Length: 216
View 1 (cartoon, rainbow, N blue to C red):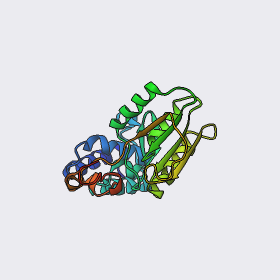
View 2 (view 1 turned 120 degrees about the horizontal axis):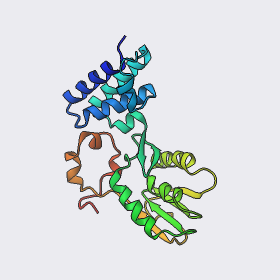
View 3 (view 1 turned 90 degrees about the vertical axis):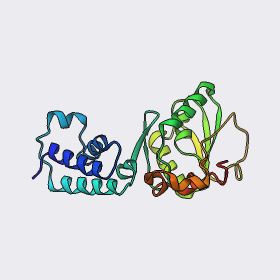
View 4 (view 1 turned 60 degrees about the horizontal axis):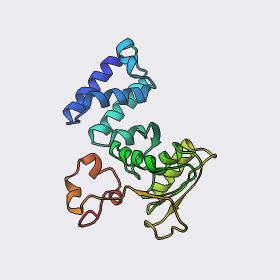
């Protein structure tokens, strides 16, 4: 039986060998996810014995990360704007850069406004979560991505917020007028897709990355 610290160090070394840039951090986060612990466990309870199931689950998680599956797709979640979003291979992993967009919109957002989010997901949900009386519609061309957005909406907004998700290619099926229109659409030039990190290139949805020949 291996203890907590030994498993962590083994995972750290395996990720380091695989060229994972933040190997130490990710090895710890995966261990905490498997064991349901926090960062203090490594310091205060490093001699904690892992069960056979925990050890096997950790080894499997490290193996997947070594194959460059994104950490967030392994754990199934990513923090964004102080909220925990569910993620999988059908959606982009929310990035901190996009928080800047949300923060800028919030500077202009007033109670009761109607928001349209094209290529939707975490942006609309965050705006509605941190506002009063605002309503919104989110559109996406991917039905699978919308399914994830609906689960996140149910988990993070509840029944008190008024919103809907619509399968639409940008404005195609959108009706009505909106006070705010916001979007973080695909913007990478097609010829650059193959130069991206394997976590992005091989595991995130191509349609959410490919901005066409000119990225626009």
